[in-house]
Image 1: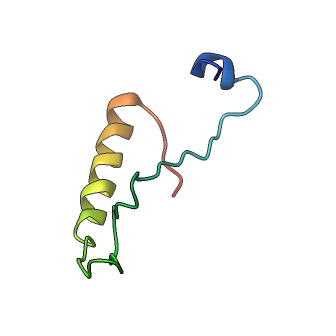
Image 2: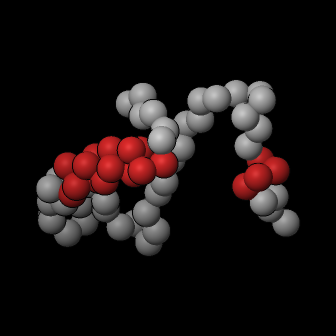
Length: 64
């Protein structure tokens, strides 16, 4: 059984985390989908803008 998030993250141990997310069912979030030939590159700027907005709301720093 997975641990709850509060038990996984320790601010005393480190203050910097690498967070990742992935798509399910081979869906493309950004870039060119080789299977269908569709380009989803336009989403990249949307995601970046949303990350910066959320960083301000939750008072966190984004490093990259």
